[in-house]
Length: 274
Image: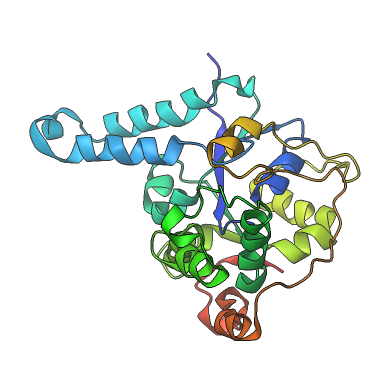
């Protein structure tokens, strides 16, 4: 009987390197990492509702519900081909660290983060790069101007605002010691150094990664469904890329000085790779 894999997750902020990091980890012969966000965490949340409410509540005993939920995680990634380490990706994991801990006591959560100024700048570059403004990341009623787009993305429902709240919840929560915070700038500047630190924490043997020939996932269908081609594109070579800042000064000021994970006095035990 094949043993269950060690399970870890990648979560965090959008436009912060999670797809790149997963592509690099997939080079390791002992790792199967999802290419981009999966529906695993949302599926678990729906099953949790069924298990904790209504007429079926008493049908799930302690031990049984854990086996069922682990079956969803490992079943979804059945194509892992017996690799000893499985890495799922999803923003929602940050809201369910206690569940992750209950299912996989040794699991780590890798949170990819970035300066919010450059996250919003990256979103704006993607959305406004299409003259027809077709990206479904922003509802049509909020696409007309840059201010409208940024305000929506930062709102409770927006891609940035939602993820920002969840990262705060995980970072300041009771399971903060499971978190490994990986800053985007460090990842693209020193990918081998970041991966070496992750290997130690995840119990992986050292591996020589090819940072000149990175192969990202084929996410064209996923990105097209969101009306945002290139959303999960990964460049073959890992290196910093200089981008023009297109946000006006007052927006930059509004977003500046928000990288709370850099404040040692606020840290509840997370490992910060910055």
